[in-house]
Amino acid sequence: MKTSTRLGLILLLAVALCDAGLRHASAPKVAPVALVPEATAEAQACTHYRVVREGLIPMPSGVPAAHASSLVAFAQTHTLHTQKALAAFWFAGTRESGADVQIAASTFDRKTQAWDAPQWVVNRHTVGQDLGIQIRRIGNPVAWSDAKGRLHLFVVATGLGGWAASRVVHLTEQAPMQFKVVRTLPLTALVPAFNTSTLVRTVPLPMADGGAVLPLYFEIGIKYGVAVRLNAEGEMQSITRITQRREVLQPTLVAHSPTHWSAFMRDYSPTEMVAHSETLDAGAHWQDVGNLSLSNPGASIAALRLSSGGLMLAHNPAGRGREVLLLSTSANQPLSWTTRTLMDGVKADEYSYPTLIEVPQDPATPHRLPDVWLSYTHMRQAIAFKQLRCAAGSAK
Image (tube, rainbow, N blue to C red; front, side):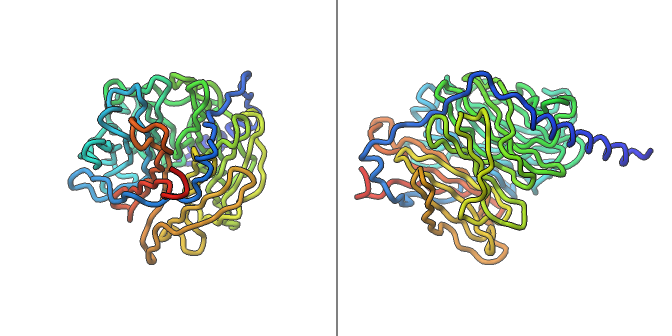
């Protein structure tokens, strides 16, 4: 039997076993409860966010390509909190999947109100050395701040094969903005030796106990989202499939209440609509509930539960695709979306792979609503950002 044929059979077996395993994966014995700040009447009065700052995050010198950014706010317990408000991470190199691709990072300085010079924080060589295996390429990073304020990175990495043969590598902060590999997340329920075709893209959903639910997805042959439960130190506790559909990926999670959550997903089917699943018992069980009224051209989306109580979704529309970037808002329940255009380009332009987080305006004014920070891929050449603030008059 040829090597390529043998490899194909192994991958098909992995798909079948992983699919079966996740369909019957046990839910956590104690369901995690989402952290949902109570929206005051004053906060609920905020109905519009305006852009107060925007631009491009500095790129490493001489690097032509960038994609798939992630944002994280520095917790009050982090060493850099008094000087830096948030950090951005993304992959950069000569091209996507290039052997020279590394994870770059930049921090936003409170005093200068500008992004600092970028630095490299992860490369495939050190990841491979720490894991004891050969890593051919790395990709999407996702950042998270744990209960103690320490940063974690979850990075897509692959050895043999393309992105569909990927795994997710977990790294933790050893010193400010310096990371070391912990391990590869053991995501395949029944066959951990395979542990392939799992990727990460969107930010975790924070839990009341200081942990998080990290959304991931499986994409070899079939495509679906999963939820990984992390404890307050970032240790994996459980994995649960969040949809029975086979053509959706890159889930982004929001909490309507501590136990009622939604997963919005990129649609890879001819329907081209944002897919929707929900749980009513804090992630113990998930149900598909159709699609949102928002179209999706098979492109990554980002959702956020706002401190004002509403929801925000950054996405590209079907028809125009990634040349247009939209921002939609809705009341928490029922969902009813109002959409505005953030970027309107021409054919071959790209404003894609958005990330949304909230960041307090100023540590000295905790009573004010947090700002919303959006990052996204700009023309595959850089990472752009927008800082949005509740418009004057709609809330203080």
